[in-house]
Image 1 (cartoon, rainbow, N blue to C red):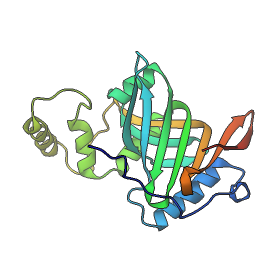
Image 2 (cartoon, one colour):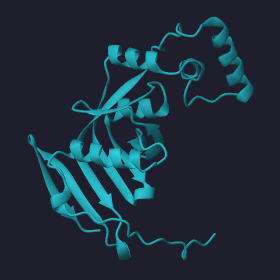
Image 3 (tube, rainbow, N blue to C red):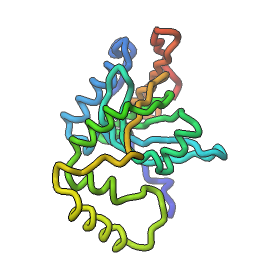
Length: 211
């Protein structure tokens, strides 16, 4: 498969330094609001990258569930592959690829677990099926077939009525506490606009990067 001629020019927007807000979280929220209003499919979908014990990188898509002064928050099975990797190396990166806006946001930082109370509060808000799914799946473990998973789900549905599903002990959230944000805007001739926020002490410094 030769994709050498498959290309698209980016000419929708530009990004100047004076357009950026001093706080990267505020800038993130502004871009997120535009992505949502412009109909980007699942604007809170983000690529989470981690490394394993050998240093090999791993990436997968997860969903952002909060963005505030505590960090960027997502939830998962702590015994999953990503959970094991974050136990080993509690640093990660997040990528929001908003292709429809010709934009990307890359965030990196250290990761800590949410409190048990916060994890329980979010679990209680999840749809009934998603709650059952969290109990049914031993995430990242090998299973014999789809029927095994479906049988486990049916068993749990018979056992727990809606509103009575217990949160698995190995399920909860993470806050990624950023130490850098990069805002990327596609431009013509691959001369993209890139601005990097880095935290130095308590101050966010902003620098333009070469594309």
